[in-house]
Amino acid sequence: MPAPKPQPVKMFQVKEKLLRPALTSTFQCNIPPTGIGEIDKFHDTELLSLSCYETALPGSSLFTNEVTDDFTGITERFAYRKAYDQTIDLNFYVDHRDSQGYKIILFFESWIRYITNDTQEDLGGFFYRVKYPNEYKKVIYLTKFERDFKGDLLEYKFINAYPIAMSSMPVSYQNSDILRCRVSFNYDRYIFTTGQQSIETEPKPSTPNGVPNPAFPSEIPPTYGDPQIGLDENSKIRQTVIENPLYNKSAGSGALF
Image (cartoon, rainbow, N blue to C red; front, side, top):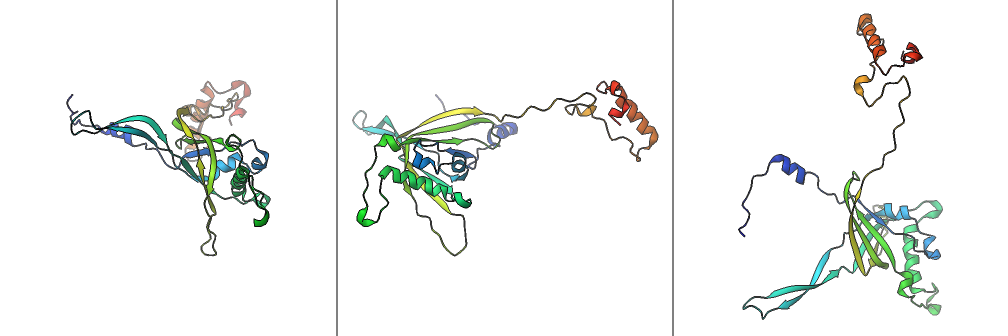
């Protein structure tokens, strides 16, 4: 089969294909409640979603086997299994709201403490006993969409995820900045799906009798009694409105003037 030849591309085709690129700043991370009371007392689904300001969509790769003996001088590679990334990093802004501050840090610290089941005692009395995996592994979600909330979206479901590390959070008297928390999650695999989403709009109220419908601009009456256009023109405008079928004659002229 010959290689395809270059073809001219019209400007409207370029606009259709290239002038609506996907943006990196429109995504949502969702961490559902764990179902564990000592962790969920610091859990806030909306706060976690809004505070997650940076992450990465997972990549895909394949494990391959090499075959070198079938053809002279040729090395072939054949795929035999899909490979998953081992971790995903989530970066959060740390909140502080009066008596409910630092909930981001408290939530993930509680989750890690629950996994190891440590005693939080001093060095002399410290001990731990790690829980079974099915007790602390949960599901987290990552959704990629666009700013108009229309069209296709990408949905990633991370199976058996749990935090394995919280990075250090530098604090300093120099150049005050927002405190950030980076959490690394381990997971077994992810499920990738696509979907469609559209914004639901509230229905508009019905137009009462005697009021022109705003959906038809040509039927909206102009300003009346404008001294700049004279009395004759004002009379013509009033007569046009009265003859309009949307005008409620039973209500009298006082309904419009």
